[in-house]
Length: 389
Ligand code: CAA
Image (tube, rainbow, N blue to C red; front, top):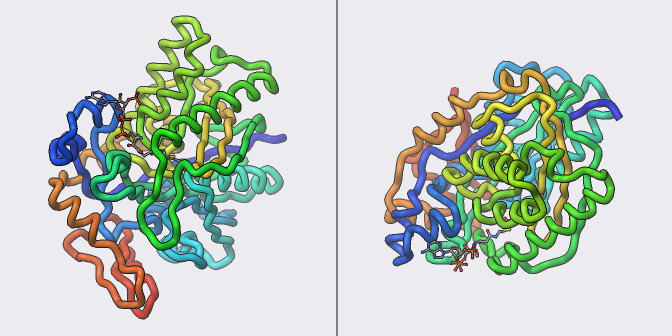
């Protein structure tokens, strides 16, 4: 098979964040539990004007800066924060970006695995059409609810990836192993905008899936941890990936363990501040690693994608020569740094100001408009978005 993979990446998050120590104090919890035990420092807070559509469009705009749209055939959006039970969020994204009508736009759902399913669809597509490209986006607003155990693992953001047969960042290998088993670890019934979760069980099943796939991957390929410069994990919160990494490290020498542990820390840096972005989390870890630490071209990176319910895939990729020039570390760090800190009262107000699940019109609070795209409100049961002029 010819080379296919990621040509360009983009990222977006909201303009507001909550500090986890502020949340811990309000909830009567030792702040170390959130910052060390769970591993989260901050979480982006989404006003109702920032949803899976506006964040996806912003990440796509970031990825497409300076790129030709020539050959772009599809927009595939992985999300579990669907804004409509029928229409794909990708259709709104296409309009906001002003993409030509000769395009396919589809939403892919399987919890946090959705963007990975979209990625492999895109890779198969471009491997048979050398001059075509696909935009893959993972975009979500992670909501567990006020005063819940999962509250500390919320967040909001999106990662976009341009997939082509000219993979200037990473070429993705055809060595995937995957599995699906029905499991009630995390789900969201249609009547609620917050996820339901069996938290401890979700951690157990995530590590179990990783161990099974890592074993099968090694059997299939004959590779070991020494062959990899980094392991990237779906990171709803940093501690979760660290538990899976420990499964790799338990059989490894000191040098390999030190290298993989250091790289894990770099990969978790953005996520510790942005929080859980569900389907984009694994790819935010990739961006965090590549923008946070110089690595040699040719380095092999292992990826573990996990979506509750539950489905997982382990695959590998190879870093391309000149990959760093495709990235924008200072722009992305600025996006994170320039968010405004909200206190717990303001976060709780914003969390509760959610579009109603009834036919009435709704207007988003203009005070919180930010970013290049936004939901303005709901009129005659239709979502109204706007882009900056
Ligand atoms: N100082 C340091 N550490 C402390 C501490 C303190 N004072 N107090 C507690 N801790 C540690 C605990 O020892 C524990 O660490 P270990 O896991 O290593 O043992 C950690 O902090 C958490 O403590 P608890 O287990 O007591 O915390 P909890 O009961 O409040 O729940 C949680 C933690 C289960 C992660 C909960 O936040 C949760 O349910 N989160 C959501 C779960 C989740 O995101 N699952 C992943 C979803 S799956 C997914 O993302 C895929 C998808 O498809 C959506």
